[in-house]
Image (cartoon, rainbow, N blue to C red; front, side):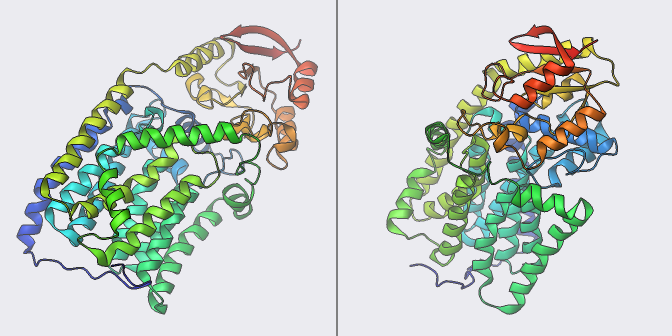
Length: 487
């Protein structure tokens, strides 16, 4: 049977001595830590995995040089992860992402430990072990550029898991703070507020504690940056981006492909979850309500924005692992072993994919960066007109504009295939700002890396006129065209 709405879960636990508790975690933590490191090994095999990592690295360098978020550099994301990158670069240097990747391992480990603690509290020691292991094994079950990159979802997941862990124990202010941290990493992290409120119920004191814990950190982040800029870039300024119109088949194909990839990784989890969906019974029915709500909220977060990039699906992993663990409690013990073994085999396939698959776009970006380094001086500003902000990081050159990709100026950043790409779909006011910036600090080199994409100069009249008036073509690299200032 299902829990009544708004009722806190009734947890039946076996009394354990402090020594037994310490003994359990003494055995489990090394296992989970080793598994977390093994599943993230491919992330250390390449200097960079996707443009999000590049964007964050460039943002962090600009902030370290005295720049201001939502002013000198902008993105449609909250500030917590750029700040984290900046802090890591201050300690370990900005020439490598190794230190950030180590923090990503720690983030995955933290998520798994929190899930293990939740499962152990509700269903016992074996369930705790199963939940932690399943979470780590499935966490790499996407295209490696989505699963292995040290980007938003990876650092959001421990916050969402912490929110549920705190709410499950009635620590309402802490739960709200964890929700706020999840939101400040990525907006969709706020979806975990739904199951937190379910556990909270209609009680005034807990509701106020959750509200205060959630709102105050977000207000603090807005005040530290720029309240108007924070509101615009994280909430109100993405209407054209968060739209399904214009590329329906393109986006639908991506949604189905990434869902299929994750389904392969979840081959060990899906059978017990499907059985639970059909029977609506587990060994801990009193907790079933918030668990389904967590999974449903994560699914809604994947759909939000209608872009379905692979890394969006990572938000499903913790509630899927916990739901599967709950469902396995009604099955024979061998079912848990089968689920873990199947997930381990699938994990091995994805790890091999990450270690062996070529990355031609990465090679292209590094060649462009090498040419840019030769053609410009260290103090020069450059403009890469494309979707690879990591070019600035590899070339070690400052961007000529706060807009690090052509997407913010054309709406191509959603992976669209053409119909809603152009100046008219740009972020409001962005072209006016772009003209001002490039007039006051004109780039020494412009690299048109559109290579036939719908945001190329032939489709963007403002860019075409600007290049014709001030620049001349001086070379080409892998289809990318180089322009130097005229005269």
